[in-house]
Amino acid sequence: MKVLAAVFICSIVCAAPTDAQTQAPPDLTGFWINQYTPDLARALGRQPPFTSYGAERWRTVDTSKDPTSRCLPPGPTRAFTAPYPFLLVQHGTMIGILYEYMALWRAIYMDGRGHPASVLENPDYMGHSVGHWEGNALVVETVGLNDGTWLDTAGHEHSDKLTVVERFERDGPNLKWTATFTDPVFFTKPWSLTRTFTPGKASDRILPYTCTENNRDLEHLVPNQPNLDYKHVPEQ
Image (cartoon, rainbow, N blue to C red):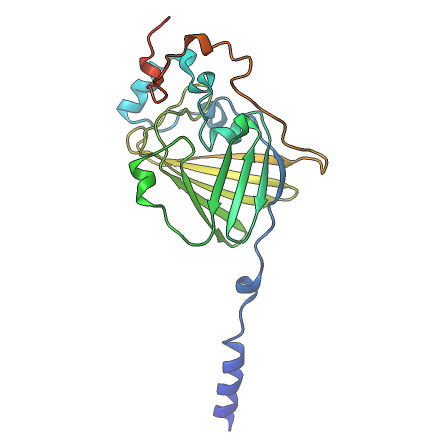
């Protein structure tokens, strides 16, 4: 009887979901204010671990050729370190991020899908993002990024082999964001940056941002070549 009772109890207890299994993920929905970071190296206290190629590119970078001055998208992580807020909208199968910066958006797929082969064959400025929960942390992997963006205003570049893994975690009322950059072309090993986002007021909203309005650089752009490498634009 004792054996039968033990089996019966175990069948109930062992089948019962744990608190970790039943606990709903935190709701990160809200209006968030970035921690402006124009120079990642200054925030890190050192330069990223450059390869010889990456070090040479950094040594010769021309900050007057910042791609955002041409109204090109900043990339997913630079949009988080710019001085513009964002709105995060959380859903069970997708998380949307609406940036005020250049009126950009990101879709983070939470339904277990992987990255389609097409995003690696045709990388773009914001890449393709999939996410999952690790306890209370939202973990997002982004691939399919082209090499037409900088990681910051200072001119830290990357290749189209870049993979970014982000962690979003509640830190009291704030949101802690950690981005880990892996790029074998520019960096000898992965490296990470952590920033803190603070909540806005309930009345805050995303304001319009039209990059081409009053853009004084327009007269210098080369027409009919939308994918032209900005580093090879001739001086006017």
